[in-house]
Amino acid sequence: SILPRKGTFVSNVSFWDFEKLLETRIMLETHVVRQLGVSITPEQIANLKSLFTDVPKLIKHRNLDELLKIDRKFHQGLVALLDNPYLDSIAEHIYDLVTRTWYLSFRKRSQDDLALTLQDHLDILDNLAQGKTDEAVKAVREHVLNFKNKVFQQPAL
Image (cartoon, rainbow, N blue to C red; front, side, top):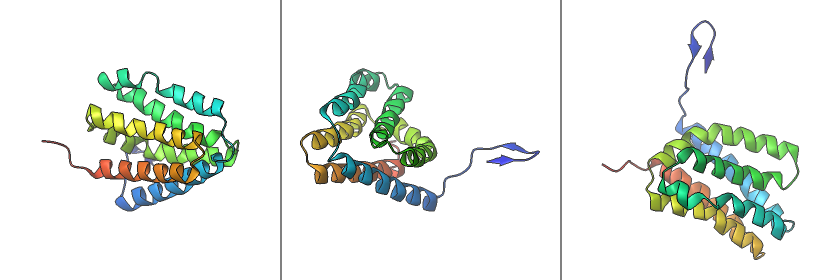
C-alpha cells in the first residue's frame, strides 16, 4: 500500500481476499488445462517438464527463491500456451498477488513436502500428455487447494 507523504507499507492479506484470489486462480487454471487438453503438443510438455530438471538439488539446498521462480514459470507457461494476452495479463496479476503467500507456504514446508508439491506439476503434465484432460483439471484443482491448506497449516514446533 502506498500512502502519500507517509510511505509504502506491506498490506495485509485478508482471508476473504485470499479465498477470492484462489477461486479465481482455480477458474483460470482449470480453464487453461481444459483448453490445453486438446491442443498441447509433446514438445510443449517436454519444455515445461524441463523446468524441473534441477528441482531435487534446489529442494535439498532449500533454494526457495529458485523453486518459486520455477513454480511461477510453470503456471505462467501453461497460460502462455493458449496465446491469449488477456489470460496472460490476468494470470500475471493473480500470480503477483499470490507470490507472498507462495513464499510463506514454501518456507515452512519440509523437503519431502516440497518435492510432493512440485511433483503435482509433473502429474498435471503427465495427464495432459496421456490425453486425460479431466484428470489434469482435477489435479490442478487439488494442487491449488493443497496450496491453500499449506498456507493455513500451523508451523511445526
